[in-house]
Amino acid sequence: MIDQRYLGGEAGHRSLWGGVSTRKARNVGLAIVGAATVIVVPLVGYPGLALCLISAAAVYVFTTETHRGTPWERWMLRREWRAREAAGLNRFRPVDRRPPELHAAFLASKGRARASVAGEWNTYRDWPDGAEGMRWLLRKPHVPGIAWHAPTGEDAWLSVVFPLGGQISGIQGDDVVNARSRAFGRLLGSLGMVTALAKRIQILTHIQPIDTAAHESWIADEVDLEAPEELLRSYKEVIDRLGGGGLMQRHYAVVRWPLSPRFLRLAERKAPGRDGWILLMGQEIDAAWREMYRAKLDPGRALSAAQTAAVLRHLQMPSWPMDQAGDVDPENPWLESDQGWSWVTVADQGPDGLEETWFHRTAELPVRAMETSGRNALWMLPLLSQLPRQRVVRTISVQLEGVPQQTARSQARVDLTSDLAEESARARKGVLSDDDLDEGLTAARARVRDLKPGKGHHGLEYVIHVTVSSETEVELRSACELLTEAAHKAGVRELRWLDTQQAGAHACTWPLARGMKPARQTAGAWAAGVLAGTGPKEELM
Image (cartoon, rainbow, N blue to C red; front, side, top):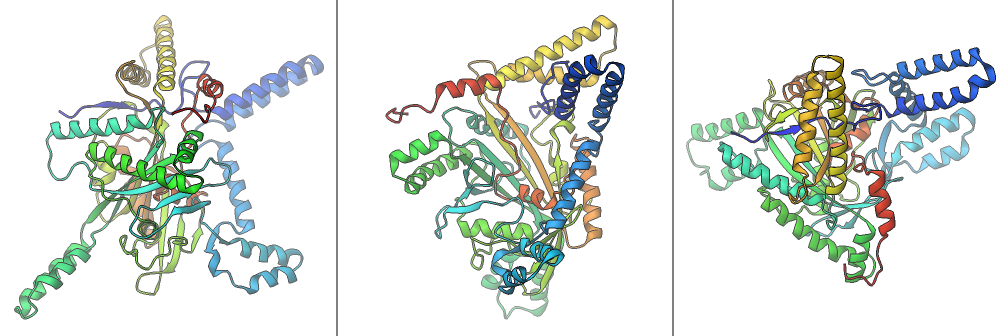
């Protein structure tokens, strides 16, 4: 039997009032109204009290969670969408394609004409949404490409992409599945160690039509061209059926190293400046490969900058071969795109020199929508390989970030205590047991048990994104329906389609390790870190 682990119940930790709280906007809004009530009521009296009660009711209504988010969130998204359209930021063109006469047109224009020219100017940018601030620390041929990410408002980090063969190939017994899932768990546990420099891993699975290039190459080398015509025609028929039939999976792991003070200090000891970063990353890349090998992920050699750029180009336009790296510019693998309300359209030159169009739509599998229940290592199969119709090109990204053991244990204990208190309160009131509470309590107990001192386990936070791609709007709509059905089978109550943000959301399923907020840190852990400082530079470690 395959081992089960509890997943779900981590969406939002318990609030001051008991239960799981994910409505920070509501809590903040009600706190503001409460503070205003204390000030206004003594000054104005009953009219002030009535106004405060109406305000509290409005806060409650506008922050009520629905399957389409809260009314407040929808209003903010629509407002941001209109602002982006007005500024021309809903379109992207690579900056090296900007017409030279556009600058002169901007200087010569006035009033509304200048605003229109400015919108056109804004469409030409260095990076598409979601990839802003990406450069290369190391981009030499035949060596691991080290991407350097420094988006505005975020701490910088480095990332490297590894191709994976996958843990399970063909039919494997339960013992093999259990052993390999435990090995993967040990890999994830290493991300939470205080001494670890790598803190996040992105597991990327891309499901695409079968690439027949290897089969065609074999035929060209091995088949006798003087063979009977019927035999040669049969080979072609096999290739055509293979290419037009099922799909194949490609797997990648993206490891992310934040440029923390400790990373910079260790790099400085090896060599000054970026030379030290490269030397330290050489060790870290080898260590990451060994960890993935121990986890039975069958890692290949880290991709070069050109190979990574080829993957990025393919994910924007799947007709480009994923392994065709000879003609791609690592500094500019971006294609022209336009963002609609519910999708992003990539329209650019394809591999045959003709313009092609691809539609992409991205959804998040919200952690709050995960049904709290026991799951085994194969729980995502409905999304991976069990769609009713297999010709759905899709990319699934799972990002996982380690949380130090002490922080995770403290939060798990708080959650367990809150759930026990709520269960006791329900029992005293004679209220029937709640299934969600029972499952949440079971999950909290499991986390506390796993995080006991001496077990070597650490905490983990995660986010899952899925992108579906098609060549027509009709096919895209059908693919979205199939994906929603598959998510329900996998125990996900709903998909959160990231409408009005599709351009940036699409990048969450690229090998960039983006699209996830840093792991939450308790106030106590933050204070302890501040008091500890960064350590003297003379220190050995």
